[in-house]
Structures are given as structure tokens and as C-alpha cells.
Length: 345
Image 1 (cartoon, helix red, strand yellow):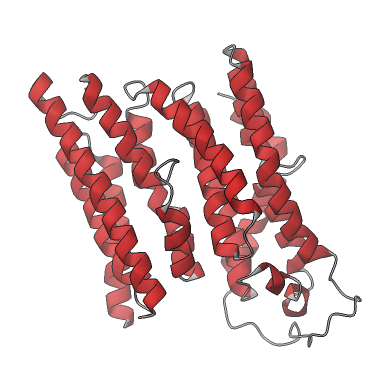
Image 2: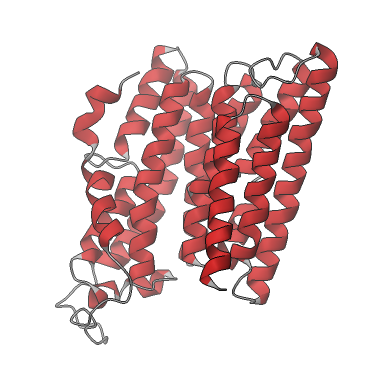
């Protein structure tokens, strides 16, 4: 793909998200989501591999169905109330339909099946866009309608996503699928807390993006695609192997790393609102996710030099990819826990 076309697609991607984030009219928000979807499709399928074509088809069908549901719910609401403002969603059926549509857009269970398949068919760079930037527009709509969305539906979908995200990642060896199930579990945390505290949901989203970005960049840098590939990461960069391990554990929410902060504050908020059973279930389900992060960390750490891994040391060679963004993103993804008192809503 030529640099000119890539630039146009990236610009369209950014424009679509910004239109949705800045709009208060349902049609504008829908238009932004559509522009966003249409811009990412050529990026997913640019490798011309059958898997990439399949991934872009699945992504298109799912996102088109979710956009149609959003449009349908906004039309129903306009018919019932006579206005198109996002902040005035009063029809109960429209509220439930919108919640389901946004869950489908994000990849919340039980509408999560497309996410692992799409990520597996995409490159790591495209996967990074899908699990970070592509979540911004639907999450903005969810945060705008947090006090009007169906609370029961969101809580059920959120808690189910945390369980399915944990169980789904247990048996995977492909890192893109592990990352997809990890994304489903993290989105579950956001969906569960959004109706209780929208500020905490936003904090969850920011920290998820902040931790996922350096993790994906380090996997791109070391050309790692499977769990087996992780065992030779140290040959690419001896320093990157322990840093990637800490980023993975941070994503799992292990203290004293950054990823523990949103989980800690979320559980604290749920307990403050007398939701101890839900908090217990979320905490127990996170152990499932933590298990597969620990397994990946084990593959990364127990094979480091001077163990007798039969691999050549590539770390002396000049890297092909830029490491500036990775160097900037790694410290906050690991060391942000001391900022917790400033983040309390």
C-alpha cells in the first residue's frame, strides 16, 4: 500500500473517531462510527492473505450490524421523544438496544466472537489500532450515555466478559488471540463499573491503552507471534525481555505494577456500593487472566541468557523498527501505581 493511501486511511480513522467523540447528535455519531469502520477495513486486509480478507469481512459484518442497531435505537428514541440528542435517551427499548450495539462494537461477551478472529487475521500493528484506538469512539458513546444505558444489561455483559476473557485465553498459544481475550476481560471491567462511576471507567480505559501499547510494540520489535517465540526474545534485546514480562504482569493487574490501580479502585468502589458478590466474582475471574499472563512471563523469563537456548544473539544488530515510542510508553505502563491517590474519583 502506498504511503499516500495509508496517510488518507489513518487520517479518516482519526477523523471518524473525533467526529463521534465531539458529536451530541445521533446521526453525526453514527456517521463518525461508519467512517471509522470503512477506514480500518483496507488496513486490515492490505496483506492480501486469505486470513486478512476473512478478518476484514468479519469485522465489517459485525461493525455494520452494530452501527445499524445504533441507528435503529436512535430512530426509536427520536420517534418516542421527538429529538436526536445523545444526552436525551429516554425510551427503555432504545436504551437496551444501544447498550447491546455498543457491546457488539467493543467486543463484550456474548458478542465477543469476532475480536479473537479479527486480531488473529491482522498484523500486530493493525491489532494495536483495533484494541486501542478503535475502542475510543464506542467507549465515548458509553460514557456519554452511562446514566441512561441499561444498568442490568451492562453489568451482566461486563461480568460475563471478565469470565470469558479469562477462560478463553487459558488454552491459547497464539499471542494475538491471548491479547484479544485479554482485551475482552479488560472491557468487561470497564462495562461493569461504567454505570457506578464513569470516571473509574475512563481511568480503566486510559490505563488499558497505556499498558497495551508498549506490550504490543515490544512484541512487534521482537517479531514474536506465539508463546514459543517468547523463549527467544532475549536474543533480540536482553533488556526488553524483563520489561515485556513486567508489562504482561501489569496487564494482569499484579501489584505493585500500574495495572493493579484500576482493579483496586474498581473493587473499592463496588464494595462502597454494597456489591460485594460482584466484586468477589470479578476478583476471582481476574485470577484466570493472571494465570495465562504468568505462563507467558514464565516463557519470557526462564529462558533468558545464560540458559542453553539454541538461538543466535541478534541484539548486537541495529533494530529495523523505531524504539522511541516504546521507550516513552514502557515506564508509565509499569510504574504508575504511586499516582493512585491522585486518581481517586
